[in-house]
Amino acid sequence: MNTTPDVPYRLEFSVEVPGTPEQVWQAIATAKGMSAWFLPTELEEREGGSLHFAMGPEMGSDGHVTGWDPPRRIAYEEDWAALMGKDPEELSPLTSEFLVEAKSGGTCVVRVTSSGFGTGADWESEFWDDMGTNWMPFFDNLRLYLAHFPGQEATQLEATASHPGEADALWSTLQDSLGLAGEGETVEVGGATGTVERVGLRQTLIRVTAPVPGMLTVFAYGYGDGTATAGVRAYLFSADAADYVQREEPAWRALLEGLPVHAE
Image (cartoon, rainbow, N blue to C red; front, side, top):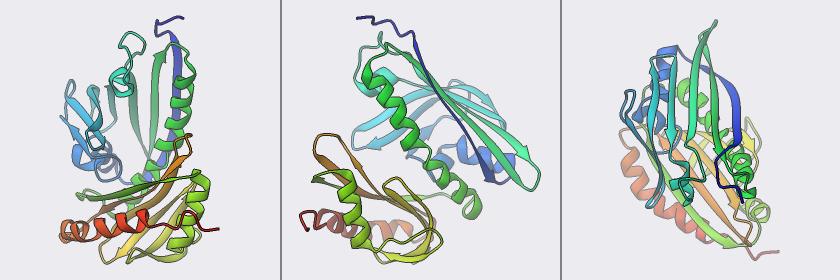
């Protein structure tokens, strides 16, 4: 089998977001900004600076900044082989570039390109297919962040629980248990009140207004091995947010673990 990384992969999309180029730059090119709509991020804000995205307990992606032109362009590389536990000779770095273009009316278009080279293995194609599906919903978070919380620091809440079964069935149970509704409707989930901003593939994004303002995503995903995970991820913007998370994260975990997955 060919183990030279010469099979190209590429993901491209663009999103229109509110804000000035400087506000958008703060959101996409600083540790504080990226942690407020994406993953907990460590970033040295300069060309050559180190980068780390936290993906869970003892799991993350490491890289460095390869392009730095505020407030127009940031590019970075992640160590794709290390992330996937593969031989470094099989995979190129995973490169990403964000371009910010100001539009009339107080918005910007962010053009995102990610690319890499692999060996053509089946799992590589699946990785890139999943990457688009999993990454793009975060840019709805970016839109909400820039519309309602620009420049603010987030406190994250995250809880998950795994169950036997398929992701679709678990998502249906989660929707029923929480009383999730359609886009534009007001909901109360886990003691938080808000408005449904987006309903996507096995996930619902809610802009929370009380008791702590922020953004909350409820989701479910499968592993293809007969198990699935239900979860909630929130970005909260308030001086009280840390106390709220400490109090409510265990309650969310208990709710997710107690889902009636065997109910007919």
